Image (tube, rainbow, N blue to C red):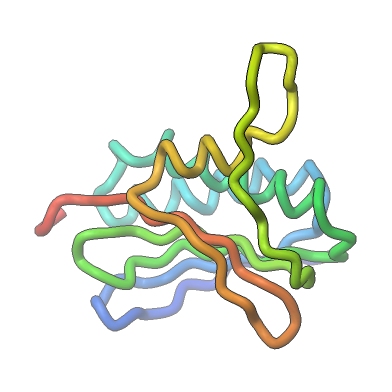
Length: 142
C-alpha cells in the first residue's frame, strides 16, 4: 500500500495535512510524523510532543475498537487560535470517556489522555464512519 500525505489550504491560510494509513499499530509512527511536520511548518514546535501523544491515542483507539482497513489522519488549523488533530475510521460507534480506578488498568485511558491534553475534543459522524478529533490551543499570531 502506498502512503502519501497531502497538504491542502484551509480558510485560515494555513495548509491542512492529511494521510490515509492502514488501521494497524504500525501507523502510529507515520501519524506522529505527520503531526510533527504540520506543527513545525506552522511554527508551533512547542505543541509537537502533545500533538504526537494525542494522535497516538486516537490512532490506537481506531486500531483497538474498529475493524477498519484504513484510517485517515488529519492535522488542520481551522482557526487562528487552535490546531485540530483528527482520526477517521469506518465505525459508527461513538467513543466514550471511561474512568478507570487503580493502577492495574492498562487499557481504557486513551480518551482520558486526549481529554487532559486538549482544549476540547469530540466526534463527528460521517456518511461512512466517524472522525474523532482533539483541539490544541495556540497563541494568536503563532
